Length: 447
Ligand code: UD1
Image (cartoon, rainbow, N blue to C red; front, top):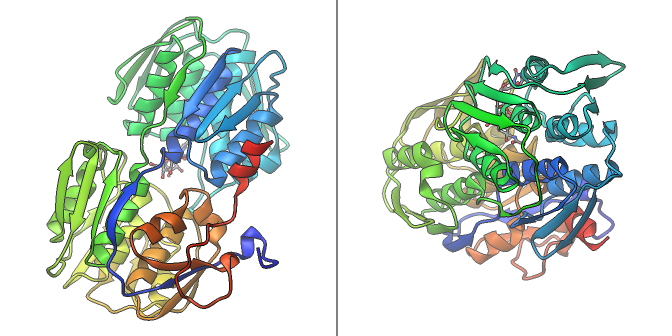
């Protein structure tokens, strides 16, 4: 590691190469994390395949072990067994590292009738509340207290009930789905999130024996109280990873295909690419983009699925800096999700933000410099910008990118990008075939 900690690692990107080739997509981060948590619902072993090797998965594995579950892994499959030693206290150090850890709340209450979870920290993208999770669990009969920085949820037996959500929150829908599997009677989650990852979680729970109807719609019904058993399941492909590489292909005027994802999962995103003048071909679990002409400006507003995914907003802004005119991006899902804009502007973009709108003036030529990834998707946006910038771009804060992109160096090199991780060798900016260092997940898998 050249004496560098993971927090010091840098990605060096030499811009100007067209990306060409295929990317085999990893399993979706936002699904794998929830399936790992859902494994706590049974004492039987669960096997989850196509788990991405990313540090967020490593954090969730550490969390499951801290809760008393056994986790072992080989290749991209993780085996989880939450036997009699399961406890219900999720420690601060882990929840602080990854906000998604609060997803263990629903399964723990379902299984043990009790969960004590540290109040979350997580991504630097605005205050991320958990009031919908809490109110929903209360509707199912749980008692919730918040004290000394911990949320304590207790129940003497959950009861199914109608649970209307004020907003189709992904995490709240998932926590409630898992809690509802143990609630006597029927739970109806209204205004439920419709993300593909919710459907994957429902398929996992159904595989365990749960009775669920309406996955992928705004009304999900769970007939609770069915005994749950072990399951073997493969995680769906990561649509955000797919979108990121497709944007990189379009930005560099290359030709990039993603393999493994149903194009339906990226519907509006692909429509926007076409509106910008990008050629998009859709096949069975295959999406190909190419571009040889100019790009047109488009307006984008992020919304819950099937709207434009907020997780692709930052990367899409990079493509819009190349468009022949002005685009407006409106961020409706998270506050403070334009944190990468200052860094993009340091590379030469012309983006102005007012509240939740960003006005992107194009076309701009970018020139490489040192930039700092502010968060996971912002980090991916900076790498995308580096691919089209003149000269060398040094992206710092790589630990953010490691949270969610499996083997980004290998995949970029496979597409012909000139990239180097500083920990791989001397800082030359030249290509190398060295592998990136093993991350948390690898370490978790070996123990
Ligand atoms: C998940 C994804 C994240 C994605 C997001 C939206 C994971 C691990 N993360 O995050 O990558 O960007 O969905 O697609 O799956 N809110 C409340 N109260 C609540 C819950 C949420 O006000 O109780 C607000 C949040 O502050 C945010 C909005 O609702 O403004 C959306 O949040 P939510 O859909 O819950 O996102 P996450 O599940 O946190």
